[in-house]
Length: 291
Image 1: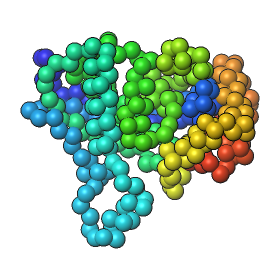
Image 2 (image 1 turned 60 degrees about the vertical axis):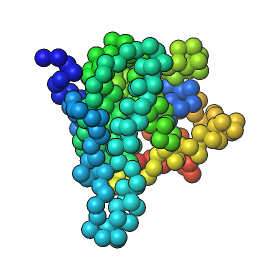
Image 3 (image 1 turned 90 degrees about the horizontal axis):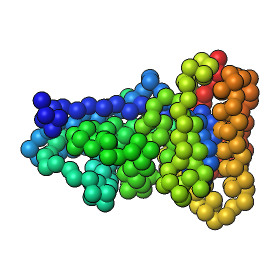
């Protein structure tokens, strides 16, 4: 059966920034991995008109009362997944046009599901966008024309369209899957337009435990404060980010050697740097422990 007439569904998994976070925004290095416990799935079904279906829970527009509406906004924010799906459609269309990628005529309906806890640093928004991009690539049969190393940038662009301030590492981890070492050096970003992404054997990791908070915060707003200080040439922020990036580089060596004591020390050091150097700017909502 023709691909344009069948239902397409893709999943993208939550991601954990193991080391180097958040230096990806600052020409640094990171190690991240995707987490099979949580995911977002997007379904694309061919249809007569292009339709973005709101999720009955995450895109709620009907409330029991005014109090219910206000409480919902205070806890969940104003935004669900519809805006994310619309944005990646726009970014994908514009990228295809700019790169002379011909898209066949035809419309579709997009819908999504997710079990990724909201605003806990597990990249729930980018997972929805990543899964949607995979659906679009297959619907239009252009996966071979959009290089894998370019896809994280498209996902990030869709989020930036909505004012979300973030880096590439989440999207790289979700596009590649598994455990990935990423080098976002200025030279790579300027010359290639993306970093160098090196998949690693995830079996090299020791057993890990994830703890996430139930008091979510908007990471985009927090990132924007640090970003502005970095752009202003704040030497403290610049040196801190360089040190965080070094932690990831040393962590790669420790993982390859299965030196888990060193890995634990580096994870603690990364956490301490973020708390000590950026305590008023960037909060931590997830913690990873080696058992």
